[in-house]
Amino acid sequence: MGFEVCGPNEVMVVSGCCHSQSIFIPGGRVFVWPGIQKLQRLSLNTMTLTIESPNVYTQMGVAISVTGIAQVKIQGGNDKLLQAACELFLGKSEREIRKVAQETLEGHQRAIMGNMTVEEIYKDRKKFSKAVFEVASSDLVNMGIYVVSYTLKDIRDEELYLKSLGMARTAQVKRDARIGEAEAQKDSGIKEALAEEKRMQSRYANDIEIAKSQRDFELKKAAYDMEVQTKKAQADLAYNLQAAKTKQKIREENMQVTVIERSQQIQVQEQEITRRERELDAQVRKPAEAEKFRLEKLAEANRMRVIMEAEAEAESVKVKGEAEAYAIEARANAEAEQMAKKADAWKDYQDAAMIDMVLETLPKVAAEISAPLTNVKKVTMVSSGKGDVGALKLTNEVMGIMEKLPSVVENLTGIDIAKSMKTASRAK
Image (tube, rainbow, N blue to C red; front, side, top):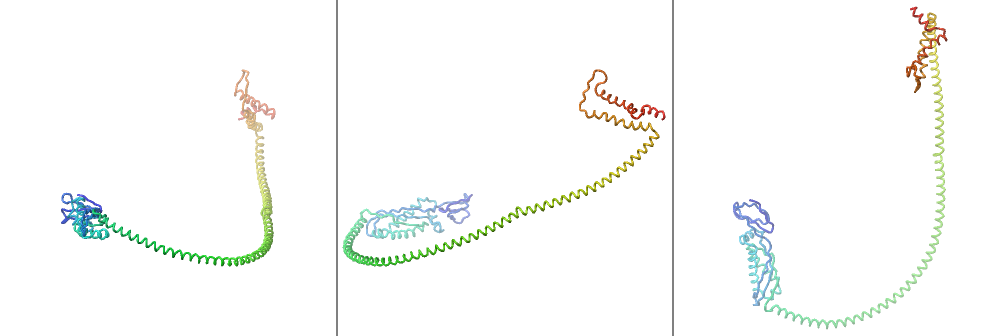
């Protein structure tokens, strides 16, 4: 099973199961069951037929040969005609269909030729073609064939009948032509003479009119020239007068323009002076006044700052002085009290107190002695090979200085430190 399709120049005929009668599909598609339904196709293309009818005797017994051209096709727009065509031509080739249509048209063409004379066929081809078309159409339409057109292409004969008709007609035409030519020449000569006479009359009349026109032209031209010269002279005088007036007016206008220009220059100069004064005020006076005002304000501010700093410094010095005086007084009182206490202690201890002061002072003395050594970056020691070497020698030097301090104290104060320390030890 499957769908079958055809173009607009073809018709499909489906018959068999599911259809009481055959269906016709001119250009379209249809579903066909293979085996139980049969599909046949019939072409709807236009067929061109050449209809030859040789040596057919016409109504007057003259034999002629005629060739016609016909365009035919199977009618696919009418169901009855399509059914009739399918009944007659379904399953046949296009060549067989062409043969049936051609034989039918040839028979009707012969019949029409027998009912007409040679002159009728030769002179009125349209009538002959119409007659063949109408008779053949009424017959072929019953077969489902539609005659699109029919045209008589050629007429000829073996006995030169058509040529004789042409010769007689040609002779008649030539005779008429000669007669007509002679009459035409006669009429032409007469008419030519009359035309020449009228031409000469027209020429003379035209020359007279030309002379009159020339005279009138010369007279009018002279009058026009005089008028033109007069108008020209007047125009020249008026032009000179107007030119003088215009020049005078131009001079007045120039003077007025000069006055206006000078007044505008004065205004421009005044405006420039005003602008310069404003520019001077803006660039010199105003900045100078502003700078003066700024400097005055700065001076005033500096003066106030100096006064305030002086007052603040004085106040600070005053407060600081009072604080230092109080501190000195307090320190003096403390030192006095301390000294009083030390005096009382010295009264009680005498030499012990002195020893105590000396002992407190010894570390300070040792520090002062060793202080220069702390600032030395490099120490070079030369040994003779006897005694201590290195840092021990340097320490022993410092200790040797310290051992000499009791004798120095005894020489300065009269107190023997070693003796006093032994006495203090026995007293305990």
